[in-house]
Length: 255
Ligand code: PEP
Image (tube, rainbow, N blue to C red):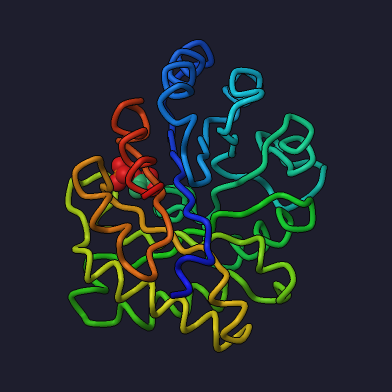
């Protein structure tokens, strides 16, 4: 079973929630609850929380991620944040191509690709989000939509570099809606993502890549989703803002 070769990764995506002082309180609550985790535990937090978050989790098993970044190293890009800025603060992961960024901020596969390459070049690890709209699922084109996103988002990413990429399969209709993909739906698309990766990079490399599921994952459904062969972790929105719920998902991933 190749699943055993891959370390499970549970990442919280806090979105635009928590001020720095609130971030400190939440992380302090989480630290003792996840300290024995047998999986990677990440909190992806708003930019302004990063300093506090990195400081709060120092010496613990929680890693800090950002929720986006720009692809250029520096320059006239008012309001943007570079990989170098994130790295200097102690960030290790960056969420890219989240559906909310695609939906509200004009993110395209081309810009996700540029960001992915910049993040890898900086020695950070991208969590690249892909997933179909409800309309696309209804039209029975989930497979082509997700395969296309993988091919475009990872264009020109080498076999060596892709080992540091995490893919998050996030069906857009399941994000923040309380509607979760069934275990079988999640497994079907995560397996298809692995097949697509295998076509590009070969089976061995594809077998080593962590593929998360995201979309209303919570303490009640995590264990079943995470038991699937190709679901190696979770990207968690709402439930990552409640220490007990997030810790329960981390425990499910540690089994
Ligand atoms: C997300 O923001 O990536 C997400 C999966 O959100 P939620 O868990 O709230 O659906």
